[in-house]
Length: 304
Image 1: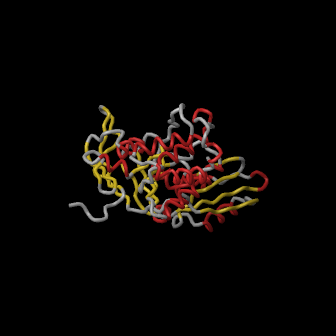
Image 2: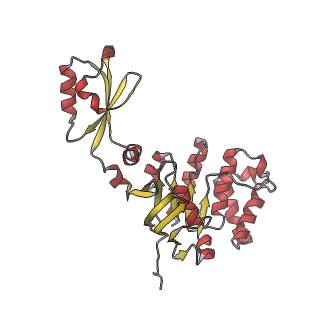
Image 3: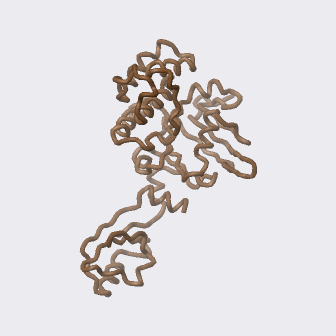
């Protein structure tokens, strides 16, 4: 008998092979109801493969996936009704206008006129109201992306996967999307986000998994992930074009237009010791700035 309140998603030892290529190597984790969860990884990490398996577009070589307790293979109809996926690709039917496209999509899930008010609300929230009767082929790329988001949500799924939803879109759409998703999340919708804009994941997600080469490299809350490595960055610009002494060269993280950024271990490389070395070298500092590591720094550290 299944648990009375199963997790939103359970991924259990999922493996996927394409000949000799292992795209997923026994991935296991679960996402609780109501989470805003980040699934991150470099290109080729296996994220899209895993999403395809969750959505029922691909079959795992081994392992199981369940959406709210419904197995995506043996109970696929209910699993798919509980799930909405916003894909990376702009896939649309050019022969329908926006509102007809959304109503047809709703029909695939057995929904009728009862969801039309919800469709109208989404058109309003996603700034598509003026485009409701416009043919899909006449829309800009950003407008098509908005329709894809509405398509994924048209049947009011309790679990939503956003696969690179803001790739190549303008700032306005990003703000519109995140405002809408925050509202849905506050009403109990579970949201899974994949993105290469790591600042979005850092801001939106309460827990993050980092996938690399088909394996989970980290699975922690966002604060735990950010505190994972005890280092900070020191950005320096020297007066009169001075250069860094050789004793500090191994600490250089980046160098651009006369600005040098040092990566300092908080215990092994205290800032005071760095300033002592600079003074000993006779360097005058024009500007200095420190910053704590962000999610991008941690991501690069884990995936090299």
